[in-house]
Image 1: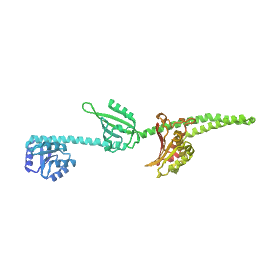
Image 2: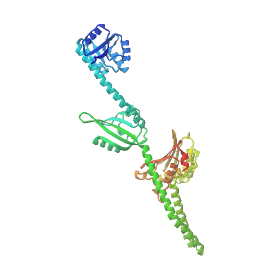
Image 3: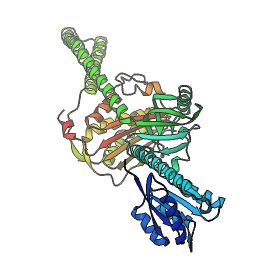
Image 4: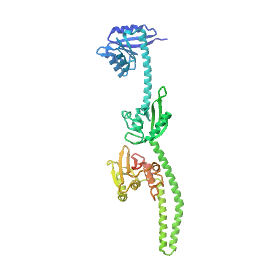
Length: 489
């Protein structure tokens, strides 16, 4: 069996101490200790930088600077080898400070013998190896934490943030020093949701999938899925929580789009069935009516009834046409257009209604808005449906409608807001459904048609509403969307 070889650098301005340490270690038989001596502070630091030794023995007194100064610099440059502090007399404050800075051990030179110094070196090496392994593992897991796509966080048992991954900070728009002053509760939109989440987590000590709306630093809502678990001490008491937050906004949007697409397809099938079943007898009614009118002598009362029948059959035919148009995909006539100009044109179409209801109209347009590919006529129809709904929702003489446009990155936005009574959650989820309407005499196809037009442009329409405060529709256009595909539908 070979003898272990350990290389030691003694940093001491007294050569006699070097001789003593060398001789003491030479008595150890099972290990070969090669002791080098360096009296210079600067040269010792240079040697530490080169990482040429297994252990460093540093004397507290080194002339102008002391061993604590050298220890600090060694730690700052990332020395991973054990450092043992030596002093001529026992100073508890030096002992404490050395261990706080990062020394592996502390020894009083007057009390050193072969056994104590050998034991101290062996302990320091084993201890440092263990710490280095832990450091490497921590570094590996820290990299996983830092590079995770999902947002990861750590909180104490009161849910105050202790740490957050870069993905978490990016998702919610905070810096690390900002989020560590927050509670997880601050990121929830609804306090009731947080109460439910916290109750489940404390009761079960984990939450597998908790879907909730959270908010960014600037108040933007995000659909999220949270997975969280607790970590405990040796007595099984909860010390804190760790969790992963997944942004499922896009997934939810895609799911909603698929549901809406299925509804449109169903509406189209119903519309075609009704058109087939109703238009044939309607045609027969019109033909019979024309025949009766032709054969009967002129009669003022009969003419009135005949006119009522004719107008209503035409109305039925018109409604069937509107129902078919609301459900079928549109063929687009795409041109480079400015959304500001389209909005102004649409407002002119609604001018009479706006004046009649005495509605205050505000425009907050982005003057730098660029032209994008649009079918201006169809987009105007969609906007008109939304603006008309807003006009009919507000109180006469008190109504306020705000039209906004802006652009960010590759997207352009149009927002139409009103100060009407708002829409409850149940009706909000059905807002774009065919035949769903809150207006007397309405068919409930205006917003269905508007959504169909928006979808045909590969754009997205979203609605938010607060009871008693109003409703806002936001349409998002992607300037780089493949609109050629949309025009070929």
